[in-house]
Image 1 (cartoon, one colour):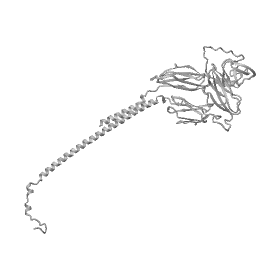
Image 2 (cartoon, one colour; image 1 turned 135 degrees about the horizontal axis):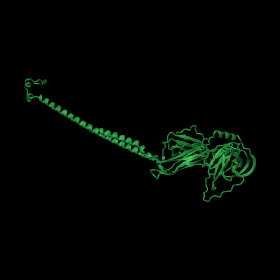
Image 3 (cartoon, rainbow, N blue to C red; image 1 turned 90 degrees about the vertical axis):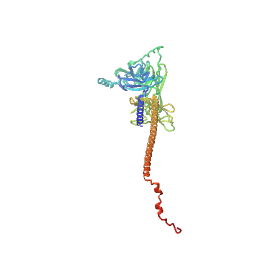
Image 4 (cartoon, rainbow, N blue to C red; image 1 turned 45 degrees about the horizontal axis):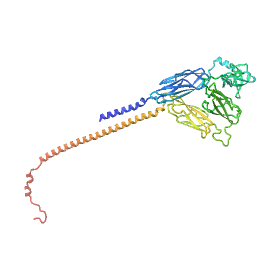
Length: 519
């Protein structure tokens, strides 16, 4: 019995060891990920993006959303359970999105299993700080203003150039193509900020351009090389309107925006920059704003003549005139409620704030997000709330009004701790394997314990019966001995037959009368 108990303890110990090793022996799932060295840089600085394949192999890409940066060194575009680093240089101030994406990648152990993954980083590029002497010179030059002599004639751009909102090289710019026709309204001979500036009119707005970038003779159109394929890139890389905020924040793939202005605004300065320098941008509807809703259209024409139109719905004055209004007719589309289970917003949710950051203390597969629009029938779409990777993950909440005239984008940047990522592609399988192993181990342990206890009980009953039989045998032996002793004593004191037959004493005694009838 003691041996059986020792065996039982050994089995329990082995089972515990097996169960504890299950997470260790589970094979790491294949995945693709990327990281960035920094997300805020200065013009002239460099930063790196590292792409990494874990237990996987295949092709990937790393790209930038615009020309604000350039690639100074790059990887091969192929990973085999390894990593590669790409180096970028910041060329000009603004923002740029760097995207690393697995394009043709499979699991290292199972090439039939595709590995997907995409990681995007938004990099802010700041103007380079000037030296003291440069600052002094700049301050001196900024106090100067060019003196313009009024004129009225037509000029043309000598190349793909920027039209500035003032005579500062750091002012807002609108890029135009070579040969763009401009109305020259003022000339100057004074050098300010390193250039002699001309004042021009473009699409109804006053702009400024360096005198060396315009000509009175329209440049001849270059004959395109039939062998070269024309670009179809008709995206904007930047869109701003001076003095107002666009909703949602600009993204090149979002075509509809909203904004509001006060009643005294009659004209808006729209700054739109094409992603491709060969594309042309035309702005319509930004003047003579009327009360109520106004539509500004920014039409981008690619080199191959394909177009894309960005629309900004600008509401002037009060949003509503009262009376019979529908939810989608004039109210600005926003989120009315945004809740994330287990996560508290730092300063609470504000419908007018469109970007949030959520650092997590531990890894999760996804967040439980509740989002409700302020308009009836509006569509709410949550994008990117799954397959989180270590580092930054971007969740996009896209709102679309019922009549599809308004779209709004909210973004939540979720930071997952390094080394704690959950790979949902293999969780179910891992859970099934671990759960099955645990279940089988528990069942075996129960069977062994029940069987062992049953055998122990049977042995105990058998031992009790043996002991009882032994005790009964001892009792019988003792009873037999007592009977023998009693027999011996009885034999010693047994009277003889003669003593029993002797009646002499009886005969000598007279008989006692038994009544009045006795004789």
